[in-house]
Length: 327
Image 1 (spheres, one colour):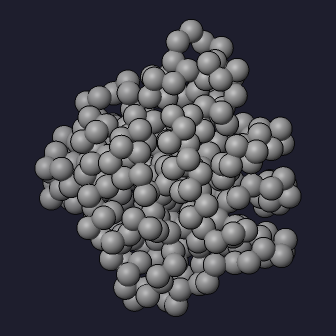
Image 2 (cartoon, helix red, strand yellow):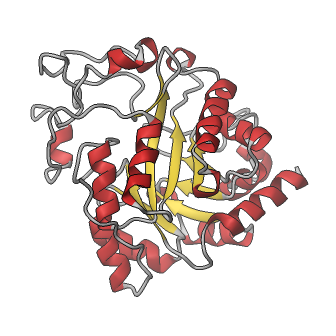
């Protein structure tokens, strides 16, 4: 346990330049371009982000692809004829890569309430779910050698049919990161800490990010409930006095990434005292961004990196360089 914590603290120290604010574009720039797509990542790079944040899934033929939802959803997915899906499905894990590429994810279904959340998103018809290596190649073509990648494993302990076993998922992702030569510019995050435990075993040089949510729609911490949460790799938060920062430290994570409503000043101070970095998600309101920066978070994940840049700049924080327009 002590060795794991020491490794996490070292990873945190190496994670970013001292004092650098981590400005992360959520799913690229979901508020401005189709989420988790090459156009969204290009927008984020042009605006200037420190980190591209995105999610990964694995197809039936074991290709790593970038996408948030393990099952294709009518709110953002159209079939080969250009029709929005009538119902959820199929699962990404059930499709080969070539089959998956027949679906268009270039716009939000205007009939879905989801569209109301992102009125500024510009549709780009014909956009496909990218392979992980395409995202790496895009950043490489941009010439940006500083941008980082915060990659989430979309794994659910309650739905083992939607992803490979956590060890297999993690091993494939680590291999892809190493093959791209990007281990020193990548963090791996997850709500399913089983994948993070595996990262610590096979790639201790890659910092881990413990994602947490204590919300009605997801509570992967489960304070006060009997036994350990299925999400936390055998660790029970109640064994740590109900302290989420101590749970995160015990898991070997360098970074704690809570849903922003769950973060308090006391929790932030405790996390800092344990040597953890704290990066909150997903913050889109400018006033809330300003409040969290004043509170002392190390980074913010936002669907609107343009808004976040303005707030951070107004606060006097150093901003990541913008990458010239990509063709």
